[in-house]
Image 1: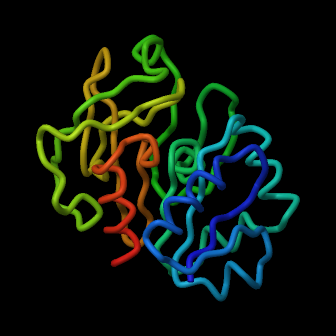
Image 2: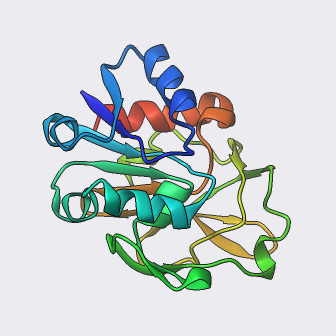
Length: 192
């Protein structure tokens, strides 16, 4: 079973619908027991990273998510929560990836942008993804390319499109709005 972690202001329902289409057992929850019983976890996109960090602390989930040894997929803000810190608000994040999340001029045109990605490291999360596949990017935060980046996109400069370290995985794009390619990414995560 997959647990979609509910920390408020998230796109959990979109993700749930996609998982239903794949006939996957899941629950949307912020319960520690649901998280510990899950085989995989998803940190969904959120509208506000500051309140997401606060909510994870209030729910006593911050430490659990740092040490748990299950595949965790962060989507959008969920991926940003997995970095070391968020530069613009001077906030410590989960630290799964020892890189900083940023907002800069490069991102001014990232809202609602369809873009192909370039795979730079092999990862099962991106199996069967083709050069011509397009992914839907949204938001104003990004992670610069780094040693953990598995793919990049060029949106007024290079950004990390996907990232992986051990059992931690993240994607900048919205897989639900990325059509068949996004569903392949979900399927790949489910089948890991």
